Amino acid sequence: MWGVPRATKDIDLLVLPDAIERAKEAAARRGFVRSAGPIRFRDGVSIERVRRVRDGALLTVDFMLVNEGLSAAWASRIQLRAAEHSLTVVSRDALMAMKLAAARPQDIADVEKLQDLDR
Image (tube, rainbow, N blue to C red):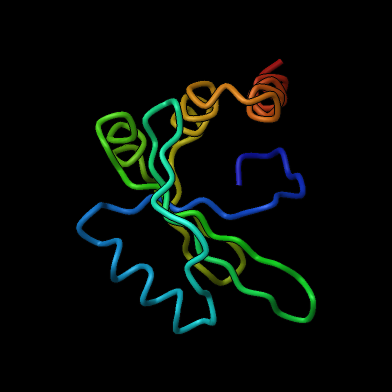
């Protein structure tokens, strides 16, 4: 969405804690089954993971539970148009902040690529 496409292993969705059961139920209606969770990372983020296999391809969705560390990202959400659909996404700045907080090598590389667009 923010100008640096790359193949990804999963889809990350922010979800309020009181909506996690509804999110998992919606995913289950689309063939996703719970595969792990909750998983807590060193940056304080907790996720619930669901997966499905279709036509031999694995698709993973990580529901990131909104906590104090993700509240600014949640508040930054904006609506974008993609083809004929409207998507709600976190702001570019919030995405970069989330990636910097995670501090994984791929996340750092993603932030550098986003910053290169500003040069």
